[in-house]
Length: 289
Image (cartoon, rainbow, N blue to C red; front, side):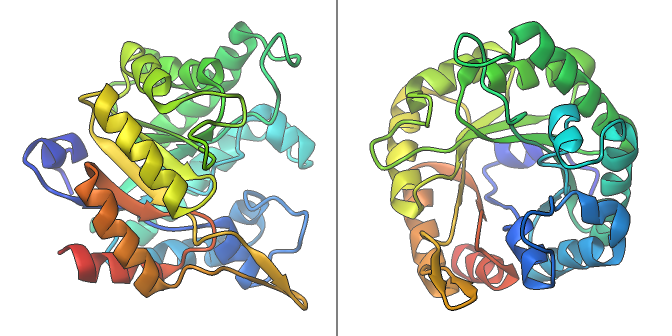
């Protein structure tokens, strides 16, 4: 797929992203408390298989299993010192699954540390952490970055800034909002959009958070504040524990209904977050194409 995803957006196309990754791996045996990124090295076939399911469902891009593949989070998970190795391998698996049928997006999540003055993470250290990861992803061959599930504008923008400084790849940046229209750190969509645009991001949006209604509310606020293309990847509702199973209350059919609403609110990239499956993505494809 040689056409840039930004060219597709500029032509008016709707882009379908993939769905959840961590919860998919949990469904095939990832133990509680084990970081999904560990399976990139320990069970690569399982990781590639999830990507393949999303490609078969019709996703236009798959997202690497690197959400937590920054130095601090890997160190917390017992994988310290393996940032380049793990990010490179994750891209290899995603590219093998995509097989030219889908773009590969490099996932970059929060470091797990709070920014100063609320925690120990300085802007300078955040930039060092993110530079290491985005360079590894770019050198391995991602087509774009998805800097996702962020709560703090300073941290997210450190990642955007490093991706823009070290590459010329498209940059998506998404935040997790609650039903009151704020992130955990009190950030509102309008400020998030302004900051991302200022740092050279190409797409802004909402993912995860408090479910589809929270994503819809964020899209309304984004639409009023920015000309950037909008991305929506809602989770499958709020998880409930039933016995030993975790149950999500938004079905694939429900998600397709929400997706139509997201498009009406201006979203040009639609996918799924926690609890969504290839069935959810196939439903989006069926509803939106």
